[in-house]
Image (cartoon, rainbow, N blue to C red):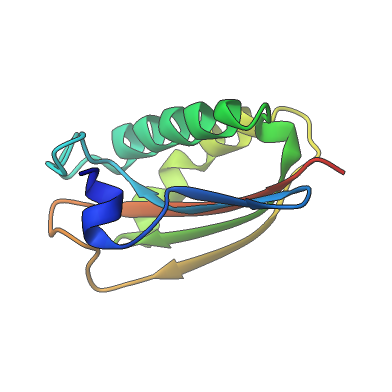
Length: 120
């Protein structure tokens, strides 16, 4: 049984031309933290995973229309934002919301990103 099924969620769901991706964190397939305490490295890992998921739907970052970021350290995020911008190149840029939270699923995690992509 997949972790997604056992935990009761889907990594991504497509309805029509829109694909909603669940929040993605820096976790290996066994749900162990990857790059504990390093927000920039976690962000790079997360965008790689998001890219892989988008690719399964024949989409790329140019299709992302909405991005929500949940972070535990806003100052660390500010330092990592140039990398985030590089993911989208010169645009189009998605709409975006960023929220600082006290803790994510595991205390070693510093960022979780959820996205919505659209073919249209």
